[in-house]
Structure formats: C-alpha cells, structure tokens
Amino acid sequence: MKAIILCGMPAVGKTTVAKILASKLGLKLVGGGDILKEIAVEEGYNAVGDDWWDTEEGMRFMKERAGSPEFDKEVDRRLLSRARKGDVVITSYTLPWLAEDGGKVWLSGTKESRAERMAKRDSSSPEECAKVIEARDRENYSIYKKLYGIRFGRDLSPFTIVVGTDGVPAERVAASILEQLPDLAKQPGAPAAKEADRPRRSGRRTSS
Image (cartoon, rainbow, N blue to C red; front, side, top):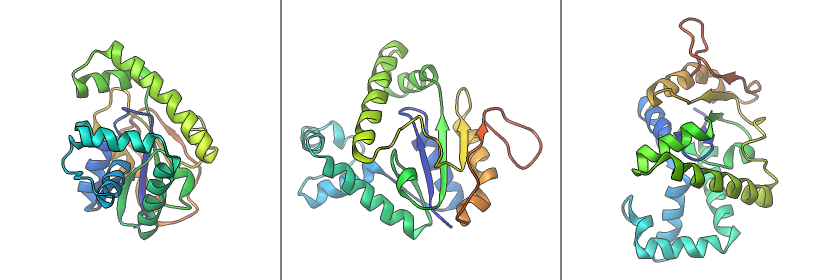
C-alpha cells in the first residue's frame, strides 16, 4: 500500500485520526515529532517519553532546532524516505507537497473548532487557544513558504481527499477517509481533491 499522508492546520485532529487509521489498517504511524526525537537521540539527547518535549533537555533541543532550517529539511527528508517505502501512515505539514504519490489527506477545520479541540486537550480556555492557533497558523505559513514556497493552508491541490472535522468524531472522520482511500492509496495519479463536508448515508463516498 502507498503511504497515507495526513495534513491539516494545528489542532485539527491529525494525530488522533492517524492513530485510528494506522490501527485499522495495521500500519506503522510516523510523524515529524518521531523523526525529531530520532535526530535528538543521534545527537546524544535522552529523548524518551511523550513529555520529553517539556523537559529542560527537550526545550533546549527545540531551541537549537528553531535556529536552523536544516532541522526541518532533515525531518522532511526522512519522512519522504519512509513514504517512498509505503505501508505507513504519516502526519506532516509539508510532505503532501514533497511526495510524488500516496494517499494525501487534508483535514479541514475552522479556527473556532480547532481552538475548542486544543482547549480540551490542553485543559485551557478556547479564547487562549484561539490566540495560540492564530499565531501558529501565521508562523507555519511563513516557515513553509520560505523553505519550500508552499502556501500552507491555502493551496490544497496536492490532496486526493479533503475531509471536514468540525463537530465530527475522529472515528467518523477516519471511516470517511477509509471509504475514499482504497484506490487512491494504492495507485499513483489519483484524481484532484474533492471537499467532503457533510456525511452521507449511501454511496461510495461519505463525508465528515
């Protein structure tokens, strides 16, 4: 099976949906954070555990990364290598524009719904999370435009599947992707993306 690459704005639910897809398909899940930890270990850091990023060592590593675009490019090179091998679910902000084929999925969501999702996840207020999301959206657009010329969040031309996540449980989003995925994930030259905003009870494509 070709790689399945999930992308979307911050806090749209990529990781949760990716975990469900990987579990149902029996595939490995890899994200940029996994590759960053891999690089950190190679550089002598003890990058262990989900909360390592919040440790003094983890924050020091991220500060070093922020000062060098090569960190991001190296992460993308390694993710691209995994994508070419296939049989993997990948979450990435940039890989849909860099990979030649695979099932490329964009998860869409409003700023309001993303702020609510982040607030529940981080035990914060939707108002504070909305500010964080707005800042991250601007930062991501600037970073990837500078690195690759990508118009992140605006150019959806690489995507074969687009699924809305506002008010939709992650299991249902994953189910919608799985219904649209078989041919797209296995064959190159998939058709252009189609927006999938509302679920349907019949037909091959269901949306969420």
